Length: 131
Image 1 (tube, rainbow, N blue to C red):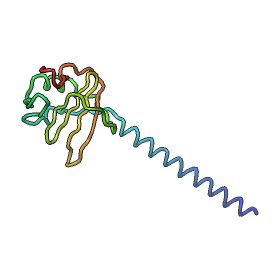
Image 2: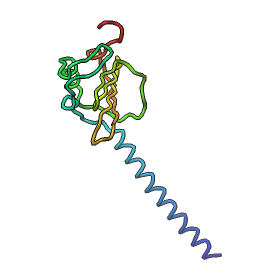
Image 3: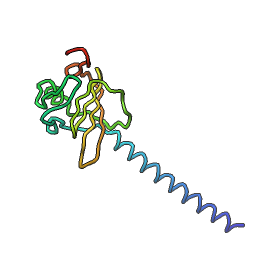
Image 4: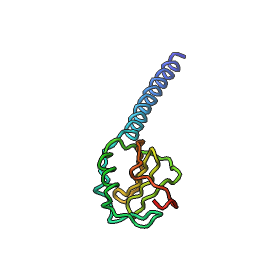
Protein backbone atom coordinates (compact mmCIF):
# COMPACT_ATOMS: atom_id res chain seq x y z
CA UNK A 1 0.00 0.00 0.00
CA UNK A 2 2.86 2.34 0.76
CA UNK A 3 4.40 1.86 -2.71
CA UNK A 4 1.04 2.57 -4.33
CA UNK A 5 0.84 5.88 -2.44
CA UNK A 6 4.41 6.75 -3.44
CA UNK A 7 3.64 5.94 -7.08
CA UNK A 8 0.48 8.04 -6.92
CA UNK A 9 2.42 10.90 -5.32
CA UNK A 10 5.06 10.77 -8.07
CA UNK A 11 2.32 10.66 -10.73
CA UNK A 12 0.64 13.77 -9.31
CA UNK A 13 3.96 15.64 -9.10
CA UNK A 14 4.67 14.82 -12.74
CA UNK A 15 1.13 15.81 -13.71
CA UNK A 16 1.43 19.16 -11.91
CA UNK A 17 4.82 19.80 -13.55
CA UNK A 18 3.46 18.99 -17.04
CA UNK A 19 0.39 21.19 -16.51
CA UNK A 20 2.53 24.06 -15.17
CA UNK A 21 4.95 23.89 -18.10
CA UNK A 22 2.03 23.68 -20.55
CA UNK A 23 0.38 26.74 -18.98
CA UNK A 24 3.64 28.70 -19.20
CA UNK A 25 4.11 27.79 -22.86
CA UNK A 26 0.50 28.64 -23.75
CA UNK A 27 0.72 31.97 -21.89
CA UNK A 28 3.96 32.87 -23.70
CA UNK A 29 2.39 32.06 -27.08
CA UNK A 30 -0.71 34.15 -26.31
CA UNK A 31 1.44 37.10 -25.21
CA UNK A 32 3.61 36.79 -28.31
CA UNK A 33 0.59 36.61 -30.63
CA UNK A 34 -1.15 39.56 -28.98
CA UNK A 35 1.90 41.85 -28.99
CA UNK A 36 1.88 45.24 -30.66
CA UNK A 37 3.97 45.35 -33.80
CA UNK A 38 5.83 48.00 -35.74
CA UNK A 39 5.16 47.47 -39.47
CA UNK A 40 6.14 49.85 -42.25
CA UNK A 41 3.45 49.12 -44.82
CA UNK A 42 4.52 52.04 -47.03
CA UNK A 43 7.54 50.05 -48.18
CA UNK A 44 5.15 47.26 -49.24
CA UNK A 45 2.82 49.50 -51.24
CA UNK A 46 2.27 48.37 -54.83
CA UNK A 47 2.22 50.71 -57.82
CA UNK A 48 -1.56 50.91 -57.49
CA UNK A 49 -4.53 49.60 -55.49
CA UNK A 50 -7.94 48.61 -56.83
CA UNK A 51 -10.90 50.26 -55.09
CA UNK A 52 -14.60 50.61 -55.86
CA UNK A 53 -13.70 53.98 -57.42
CA UNK A 54 -11.09 52.46 -59.76
CA UNK A 55 -7.35 52.44 -59.27
CA UNK A 56 -5.55 54.49 -56.64
CA UNK A 57 -1.82 55.13 -56.83
CA UNK A 58 0.38 53.39 -54.29
CA UNK A 59 2.02 56.78 -53.87
CA UNK A 60 -1.28 58.45 -52.87
CA UNK A 61 -0.44 61.24 -50.42
CA UNK A 62 -3.35 60.30 -48.12
CA UNK A 63 -2.29 56.67 -47.90
CA UNK A 64 1.39 57.52 -47.45
CA UNK A 65 0.60 60.10 -44.75
CA UNK A 66 -1.75 57.82 -42.80
CA UNK A 67 0.45 54.73 -42.91
CA UNK A 68 3.62 56.75 -42.18
CA UNK A 69 1.96 58.09 -39.03
CA UNK A 70 0.67 54.63 -38.03
CA UNK A 71 3.64 52.27 -38.23
CA UNK A 72 3.34 51.02 -34.66
CA UNK A 73 0.54 49.52 -32.61
CA UNK A 74 -0.53 46.81 -35.08
CA UNK A 75 -1.87 43.62 -33.53
CA UNK A 76 -2.56 40.18 -34.96
CA UNK A 77 -6.24 39.62 -35.52
CA UNK A 78 -7.73 36.32 -36.67
CA UNK A 79 -11.28 37.71 -37.00
CA UNK A 80 -12.65 38.81 -40.35
CA UNK A 81 -14.40 42.15 -40.36
CA UNK A 82 -17.15 43.15 -42.73
CA UNK A 83 -15.68 45.02 -45.66
CA UNK A 84 -15.34 48.74 -45.25
CA UNK A 85 -13.51 50.73 -47.89
CA UNK A 86 -11.13 48.28 -49.59
CA UNK A 87 -7.76 48.94 -51.17
CA UNK A 88 -6.75 45.70 -52.93
CA UNK A 89 -3.56 44.49 -54.57
CA UNK A 90 -1.94 41.11 -55.12
CA UNK A 91 0.16 41.29 -51.93
CA UNK A 92 -1.53 43.89 -49.71
CA UNK A 93 -5.23 44.36 -48.93
CA UNK A 94 -6.43 47.20 -46.72
CA UNK A 95 -9.91 47.19 -45.15
CA UNK A 96 -10.68 50.66 -43.77
CA UNK A 97 -13.39 51.46 -41.24
CA UNK A 98 -13.89 54.87 -39.61
CA UNK A 99 -12.09 53.82 -36.40
CA UNK A 100 -9.98 50.83 -37.42
CA UNK A 101 -7.90 49.46 -40.26
CA UNK A 102 -7.30 45.79 -41.07
CA UNK A 103 -4.37 44.91 -43.30
CA UNK A 104 -3.83 41.52 -44.92
CA UNK A 105 -0.37 41.16 -46.38
CA UNK A 106 1.76 38.47 -47.89
CA UNK A 107 4.90 37.68 -45.90
CA UNK A 108 7.19 34.95 -47.25
CA UNK A 109 4.28 33.46 -49.20
CA UNK A 110 1.95 33.31 -46.16
CA UNK A 111 -0.85 35.79 -45.53
CA UNK A 112 -0.84 37.69 -42.25
CA UNK A 113 -3.64 39.84 -40.83
CA UNK A 114 -3.15 42.73 -38.44
CA UNK A 115 -5.47 45.41 -37.12
CA UNK A 116 -5.13 48.83 -35.60
CA UNK A 117 -7.89 50.65 -33.73
CA UNK A 118 -7.43 54.31 -34.55
CA UNK A 119 -9.30 57.00 -36.50
CA UNK A 120 -8.89 56.49 -40.24
CA UNK A 121 -11.07 59.23 -41.75
CA UNK A 122 -8.16 60.37 -43.96
CA UNK A 123 -8.26 57.12 -45.96
CA UNK A 124 -11.87 56.05 -45.37
CA UNK A 125 -14.38 56.62 -48.14
CA UNK A 126 -17.72 55.21 -49.20
CA UNK A 127 -18.37 53.26 -52.37
CA UNK A 128 -21.07 54.79 -54.52
CA UNK A 129 -20.68 58.21 -52.94
CA UNK A 130 -18.47 59.56 -55.71
CA UNK A 131 -15.82 60.66 -53.21
